[in-house]
Each structure stands twice: as structure tokens, then as C-alpha cells.
Image (tube, rainbow, N blue to C red; front, side):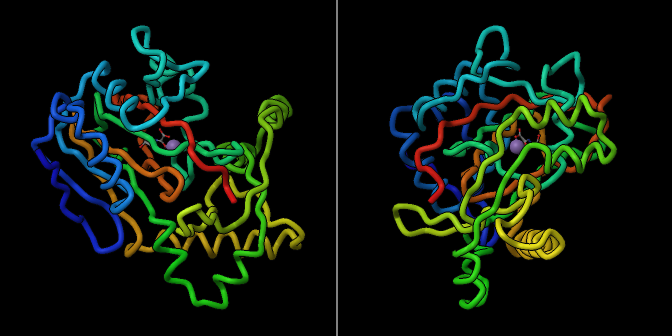
Length: 277
Ligand code: OGA
Ligand code: MN
């Protein structure tokens, strides 16, 4: 049976309702979900109420699943708990970095292909998630700028994001951030299939070979351009919602919520399939 997604806006997002976890793990579903992901960038599946076991099954049918070294649930090491509460998530101290536009794994040679996020508990205030379509943002730039940016390279680092959260870091924090290797990528990612997207965001530290203030101004301007309303989508969560996004071509961020909030997301990530080129 066909899984139908309807467009949310002209530039980003497709949604489906009435798709439960058990439908999503039917053998023919994965190919349809992947095709929809290609087309819409972000898939909102309202009240999918998918179990962790089915989330893992679906994820495996969509690609290779990342097994993170920490932060997994007891039953499913692939399922990471996303929360600002240190009692719920080992990674809580880094989670405020998610309040800034980013791509997951931007410091890796091969950033993750896709992320699946399920709302287990939601926040009363804040905690929506926003997405920005970086294919559309790039395509809409004037040709001259597209060519110019395609020649630039950008260094991405954990420190670039964390300094936004902790503007006055201790020496210990700086040391910890530095232990995560930074990574240089082209500013424009050209896929094997010819699609191109801008690769900027909070992880973007500087443009290679450009004076620092000019580099900062350009990165800020491009992020502002890419996150205009026409390229973005904001999702307000209901418990049980499942959102899947093409992590290579969408930036995303959580809107701020309190560390004491009950908000709890379960997340799986799919291994990247293409190096940034
Ligand atoms: C993430 C992330 C956003 C959110 O899990 O990588 O950025 O809304 N989450 O929790
Ligand atoms: Mn993220």
C-alpha cells in the first residue's frame, strides 16, 4: 500500500497522519520513506507512536544505524535519549548546542545521512524543532554567489557551537572541546547525483583563508539567508510524533526549553552514505 505524504510548504517538508509504527516497518515502506525523504527533506509523521524496537527496525530498513558509544537506552543501544536533564541523558551538558542551527556530525568526514526523532514527552513551553532546507537555500542564491561559495572551504568544530552556549568557557571546557577533531568541508556540498546544498550553521568556525571578521560576517549572513521563513519548517510536537530528516541537506535546531522540562526525545541516526565533496 502506498504511503502518502502531502507537502507542508513549497520548499520543505512532507507530512502523513495515520501511519503507525507497525505500518512503517512493513517491507515496502522503507523505499517509499526514502523517496519521500529525498523529495521533501523532512517527514513529519504525526502520532506514529512507534516503539523503540520498531524505530530500530525502521531505521535498519532505511540504512545503516549508528551505535553511539554513549547515551543509548538499556534495551536499544542505537536509541539515544535526548534531554536537557542529566538524570535522563548522559549527553545533557552538550544538548543546549541543539538550540543553534546545525547539522548532526558536521565534524565527521561523512556526516550522518538521516536522523529519526520520536517525542516521548514534550515541553509545555518551547521545544519545537525547526528545519531549514539547504538545497533550496543554495538554489535560490544568485548565480554569481553560488559560484563564489562553491570555491570556498569551511572549518567546522564542536567549539564553534559550544562557545555560543558557554560564552565564557573554563580552560577545562576548552580542552574538552578541542579533543573533538575539527573538520574542513567545502561550503557547498555537491552530491554524486548533482544536488547541491550549503553547508553552514553553528558548527562553522571559519572560512579558510578569509580574515576572521569577514569570515564571521559571511557565515552569519549565509545562515540568516538559509533560515528565512520560506526555506524553514517549525514542528510543534505531540507525544508519539516521528520526524525523519535528511541530515545532509537540512539544518535543524530545537527552540529553547528548560532543563527541568519533561521533554524527552528518542533518536536514531543513519550512517552517512556520501563524503562531503
Ligand atoms: C538532535 C537535535 C533537536 C531537538 O537530536 O540532534 O538536534 O529538537 N535535536 O531535540
Ligand atoms: Mn541535532
